[in-house]
Amino acid sequence: MANYTLVPVNTDEIRNHYGDDICDRLVPYQPHMFDNLMWGSDNGKTTLVGGNVQLSDGSLYYLVTPEKYGFVVKKQYREDPNEPDPVLRAWGDYEGALFNVGDHLIQDWFLNIINGIDISHHKKDGKLFTSNKFRPKYRLRAFNCRRSTQYTGKITVYKSHKDLDEDRETAMRPARAIKLMFPEFDHNTLNEITDAYLQKFAPRKLVLHVSESPEEFVLAYSGEQSPSENIQTTYKRKHMAHSCMRYDFSNLPQHPAEAYASGDFKIIYVLDQDGLVCSRCVVAMNTDDPSNIPQAGPIYGVSEQSIDMINNHLTDVMNAIQAGSADWSGAKLSRVPNPDGEGFVAPYLDICPQSLTDNGKHLVVDNYGSIDASCYSGILGGYEFSCHCCEEGLNGDESYFSETTEEYYCESCYYEEHMYCDYAGTDVHRDDTTMVYIMGSSGHRYPERVATSVIEYGDDFIYCETDGEYWDNDSAVYIESQDIWCDPITLEADYFECDWTAEWYHNDDMCRTEDGEKVCKQALDDHDEEWYLRKRDGIYYTKPEPLNEEEL
Image (tube, rainbow, N blue to C red; front, side, top):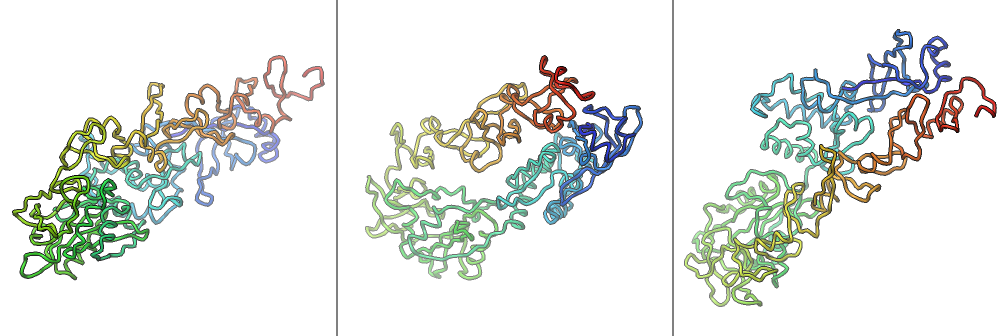
């Protein structure tokens, strides 16, 4: 909810447009109560049509488009205690925002999706959400939910009514934007709606490939991955992020997956329109099975669509036996000795038996083989690796791999160089972090390290030129007069909010009027025919009549 006042700042325009009677019953540069507002829309932007202003004699007069004729509208923001919808109550007075439909298609789509959800099943703090507390259409209008024109797949919103008035829009990842507008939804529902949004508004053009070449095994395993969606995982359908073989293994002479390129295996993989990997599956073509039916490993992917493409190929084209029933016994892998010690460069086997026999030419999948093929290091049959820092010997389940240094660590050494970032949702090397600052509720700032990728690609933090630091976007303030972002500490010390324009200016531009108002110099210059500076006290006064030089 917002309180509005109307400030007369140009009496000539007011007198010319509204007449002497109205102008004489106004107090120049003083706020007048302004309510019963009427709102409209101009090219999708909410505009003020008019409202009742209280004149000096207590009477009300309806003004049309007052901002065009000598008035400044000021607004103070506060929550409406009578608003039943908690999200709208926090967002602010949304009546004027109901005209904000910057993207009819996405808002109508969200309403159709949400109308199919039984809201009564969603609980928060043990309480059921009822219909009068859940107004999805009004929320979508208030936030002006729309597809980002700059970042494919993101959703642009106004996070509050103040942001709307200042035209401060934020492009957010779909899951975060949906959670902001509809915090009632549980994790599974949020994931379902996010995936449906991505499939509807950010579809991928996928192409399936089948190969036996070592280069394409490496591409399918360690190539850059397409953005992830939320998928339902089973034994034969797994998320690519959970694959222990997805790294480039630059510490080895070749990628372990190349061992599959022996002639007994095929790699099936899907790329998107940008050449990024969406899914993959290894299929054994020659095994001990007398029927010689292809035996497929699990399908790893980042989206249900790409996993389905491989699944359909396995079923309809290859008639393959899939993970859970498949058996790779008898299939041969290329024999690549480890040049740095014992064992062989070979991958973790997803399919049983997870053991190999060395016949001198190949590594053969064998239920009674002596080589353990259930470790993730890329070296089978010898030592796995040692900690990059302390050189302690490590087994696969004891090691921590750093994607930054591409080295393995013990747990203790790993967390001396790495930290978990809540914003990125993953561990990051400390060299890949940036210090940011957040203003706490007590008015004191506190520092926090976050992944640099969050700064570069996210929307949580803003660089403030005033102190050269990154601040959370709720603390930083945009100074339009200087075209910079300002941190809250410098803002309080060096800037002021002009009582006439409601914008921020440096203290060097501050002037004071006889009524105690803080006004920027430019606003006074724009009305210099009505104001003069009394030099002896540095205060601006209204001109009662033309003054001679001695009076100044």
